[in-house]
Structure formats: C-alpha cells, structure tokens
Image (cartoon, rainbow, N blue to C red; front, side):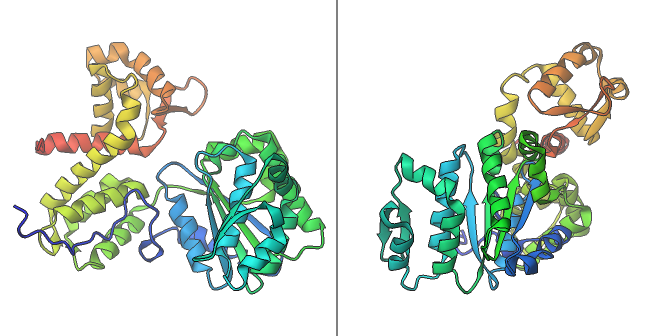
Length: 400
C-alpha cells in the first residue's frame, strides 16, 4: 500500500554520484597532503598533483571535497574529461569553465577583450560563456594556453587563485600530444614572468597514469602523486554511523559489522549498501534483518550495472560460475591456484586453468607475483563483493 508513503523521506547516501562535502568521510591523510602545497600555489608557485585509484574509489568525491575546502582561497574549476580524447576540447573546456566560475562583475566586456572573435555566445542572464572556434582558433588556444589562462586570471580572478581539477584524464592517457603539451605548459609557467596562483589536480586510473609516464618518463616529475586505496574498517564504521546519525537512525553492532564486511572498503559499495539499507528501515534503527536485505539489494544493483555486463561476455559456464561463487564464499581477494584447487569439485578442477585464463582476459582477475607463480587476485574488489553477496543471498534464501 502507498497510503503511508513518506514523500519527505530522503536518503543521506549518494550512490552513483560524487559525495557532497558534508557527507565526505575518510581520506584525511591524502587531503592533508594535497593541502600542504596550497600556500605555495597561492604565492604563484604552481602546484601539480595527480591522484589515481581504481573505479569506485571516490576520486571525484575527494577532488570535489578539496575544492569545497579551499573555496575561500581559490576559485574552483572542475573539468570532467570523461570520454574525451581531444586536447583541443580539453583546453576549450578549461577556459570556458574558468570563465563561468569567475566573479560576474563586468564579465561580458572583459571576455570580449580577452578572446575577441572566439566568443560564440554570452548569456547575459547567468552569464554563461561559450566559445566559437574554427580549426585555427582551436589550435591557437592550445598553443597559447598559458597566455589565455594568464589573461583570464588577470581580468576575471584577481582576488583568488585557481584550483583546477581535471577528472577522468583517462581518455588522453595514450596521447603523446597531451604529455608534450602539459610538459611545455608546466615548464613555461615556471620560466616566464607569470604570477598565477594555480593548483592543478588531475585524477585517473593507475594504469592510465602509467601510460602517460610511458609516453615520457619526465612527465611524472611534474606531479606530487598519491594512490587512493580501499578504506579501512574504522573509516567505514565512522561513515555508516555518522551518515545514519545525520537522519536520526542508529545501527546495532551486528548489522554494522555486516555492512562494514560487505563494503570491503569500496566507497561505491558503501554508498550502495547505505542507501539500500536506509530504504529498508521502517523505524529509527538498523537491525540484522534490514542490514542483510539492504546488502543483498545493493549487490543486485551493482551486479546489474557493473558486473553482469562483463560476466555476460563469456563467463556463462556453470563450472565457471560455481568457481566464482566459491571464491566469494571464502572471501578470497587473492589466492594461489594450487591452494584453491582443493575446494573445487572434479568438474571444476578440469576447467580451472581455462577459467583463470578467461577471467584474466576479461580483467576480472589479474595475475600477481612472479611470472607463472599461479597467484591471482580480483582486479577490482567489486567482483569479490558481488559474489560474497550472492552467497549471503543464498544463505538467507532471499529470492524475493
């Protein structure tokens, strides 16, 4: 029945979206590392920071949190480079977002003065700016990016520095042009007589950073670097307790243990579990029944969106599926082939080598240790969590 549905009820969790700064938890160590260079950036000593992390680790939420934290000192400019492989598009987007993030006083005349005929439109209401760029103009703003950045800063951001986030740099990770351009920019801003208070934070997958470095080893020397890994149990505990507390809900000890265990330190999974449990709760407390139902629902949602599209490519064998279920049942993130074989049935043992080969090809598993050591781990703990949750669903017979 829908008669008693509460239209005012709102989840404090944010699955599928960058976490708002108010609910951001953990990552204190890396936030402090990023902030330690802020004073230098404010004084015109440009800083470059690169953060990496696997999918679901919360790179965007971290970047947005730092942006919000420094907003009194620097104008935050956020760029999502997702799906973009064009340097011209990236530079165009940086300048557009910088201008659209700047204070609005007399902005129309100033923009015209800086970019002249390159301006396609300025919406006076809200002052939204867009470029009109032909091939020549696109190359011009790439080749002379530092000039346009400096002019934009001088004309539009005179009271604050610029905190520039370029998220999802992955699409340009194979581009030697991008590496050469960024190196030239970093060198030029130090050598030339520019005094731009600028902090640039890039984010991408670890292997994509490695690809960029492989284009030119000196690329890595430009950046402070950190890798975002899985959160620990204490941080997950704080996240669940504080977030549920914010809406007046308490969690009993056992349900909290389960939510922590099945999150496996993955921010994406924490948000999904928290949100699913929240909508199961019919009172002001989370018990084991609510927790388990919410965990299973979160597993189903993650499975549909991120696991099954990969699995459906060719992990269709019953033996393959049962091997993965056994990995989930054991909670095994990494394993040695010879050690794990003892848990397999004769039919599973027969296909185990082919399973490992195919799962590695699909990037579900990855080989670790020395060559041919027979050691493997899940490429992303989301796979492990998914099969752990399928075992939980089976154990409690939750086939609703």
